[in-house]
Image 1 (tube, rainbow, N blue to C red):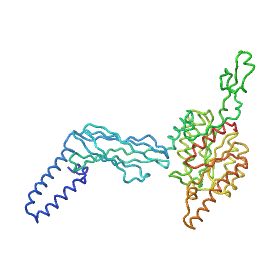
Image 2: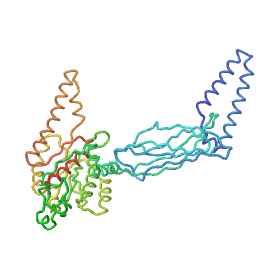
Image 3: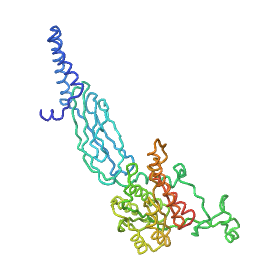
Image 4: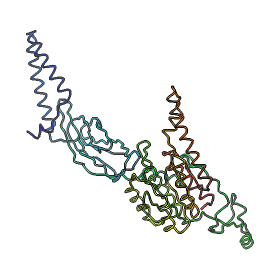
Length: 444
C-alpha cells in the first residue's frame, strides 16, 4: 500500500472536485435542503477515486517506455532524442512525460503531454542543442499515466539514467561530406572557383570528347591512334593540410552559445574530412603557451577517428598564445611544404603586429592562411540607429573596432599572407571555399 501511494499523484481535477464538494458542505449549513445532495456527491467522489485506483493498479495492464539517445551528441547542432511509450492497459490513458535532461541545458520546465488508446504505441521526439563538449548525464524518464476518470495519476519511472559524450559537430561533417561530392554545392554557399591552368600531375591519355581543353591534345598519341587524344590531368594529391588551432584566451569569446574554439574545432573536423576525400593528407595540432594535441597529416582509414578524438579533448586555456613557439615547432616538425589553416583571432592591429614576424617566417616555408573572426555583435550594434549622444559615442567606438578588422586583413595581405575574415557561423563554409580555391589555383 505504501508503494502504491508513493507512485500516486493527485491531479488538478481531483482538487477541483474536492474543493467543490467542501464548499458545498459549507453552503449546506445555510441551505439545509442541499446537504443530502452534496453528501451523495461526496460518496460518488470516493467511489470514483477507488475505481480510478483499481484501474491503474488493480488491472493487469501497465505502461512501458524507454528513451532512445544517440551514442554521442553533436556539438552546436540539434540532436534528436526519442521517447517510445506503449499502453498495455485495456483502456485509453493520458500521459505526461517529464524527462530528466542534462543540467547543462537548464530546461526546468520540460514536459510533453499526450493520449494513448489501448494497445497503442507512440514515439515522441524532441531536440537538444549542446554548446559544450564533454559528458552529459541524463536522469530518469518519468511518465505519469491517468485513466479516463482522471482523478489521480500513476508515476512510472524508467531507469534510463546514463551518460552521453558530446563530440565536435559530426552532423555538420556528414552534411558537408555529401555536399562536397554532389552537384548541390552552390545551394549552400560554396563558390564555383575558376580553375587556372592545370596542375602538373599527369593522370592518363584518353580519347578527345567535346568540351575537353584543346590545349591538352597529345599530338604524338593522336598520330599513332589516328584520332584525337588528350592528356588528362588531376589535382595534385597527398598534399599535407594542417589545421592549426589557437586555444589561448582569445578563442574563449562566445557567439550564439559556442565559443570561437568550438567553431574552429567543428570547421577542422569538416575540412579534414574533405581534404582526405580529395586525396590529400589531413592533420592538426593546437597551441597556446606550448604546442600539443598533434595529429600528423596522413590519409589512412583511421585518420578521421583520430582527429575526432583529439578534437573532443581540446580545451581553451586562459594564457597568452606563444606564436614564437609555434614557429619553432613548425620548423622542426613539418619539413614538407604544407597548407596551414591557422584559426586564431586578432581584435587590434597592435595584437597582430606583435605576432607579424612569426607569421611571416611561417609563410616563407608553407602556405599559411590566417583565419580570424568578425565580431558580429559589434557589427550589429554599429548598424543600429542611434537615439542619443551616448549611443552615438558607443557606436563610433564599435565602428572603429569593426574597421580595424579590415585593416588587419590588409596588413596580412600586404605581407603576402593568405587571409580569411569570417563570421563565426560561416566559418566552415568559408574555410571549404578557401581550400577549394587554393587547390583550383594550384597555390600549394
